[in-house]
Image 1 (cartoon, rainbow, N blue to C red):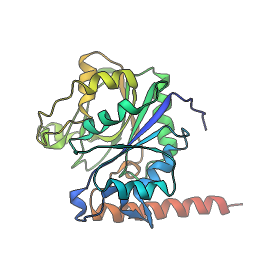
Image 2: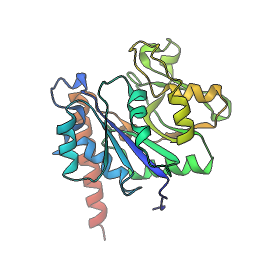
Image 3: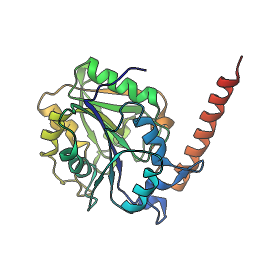
Length: 260
């Protein structure tokens, strides 16, 4: 495993209710095999940095924080009003230590994301000297996900949310996972340019891609191979799929450890 310097931080988005879960419980506290799904995400994040992990909390913030504190030593940032992913990240930026240069943004509802995929994202970002690197995945049925718009030379031109997409754009199968590695300077500048002129009237973090493209920033996508690894858990059905995948992963690890 590559050793990462103190200039790397993680922001984990964990503030939402998750209306499609049809539950009063904070979305990220829904359990996969008896463990809150945000715990899986944090287990992955802390492999790369000691304490430079910032969790955005909002809905049921004290309950979410109490759950996390039992297992992890991380920072917390309170998002008083859930005004979108861009707003959530903007809440965290003032709290980052001065030496932080690169930021990995993770979603608290992606329990299957692996350490190796995040390592590839960071390595690609640094190797290409990108301003922004987007984790994408090719999905046969992309309904519900933001589509990635790719121009020549694999440059990413933007991400369009399904609610705002044209019929042509909805046919695109390369989708956004909501996971990014981004340079702090670019992120701070781009966040200030976000607007809520969209169907949800929220500040979309995804819009920083189009902002960067217009400013001729270096933006590429890392396209993951396993769509189940990147899936966001948005419903009880998704939760059952995540449980099946986690069981499968754990059984494979057990088989590997027990092999001669």
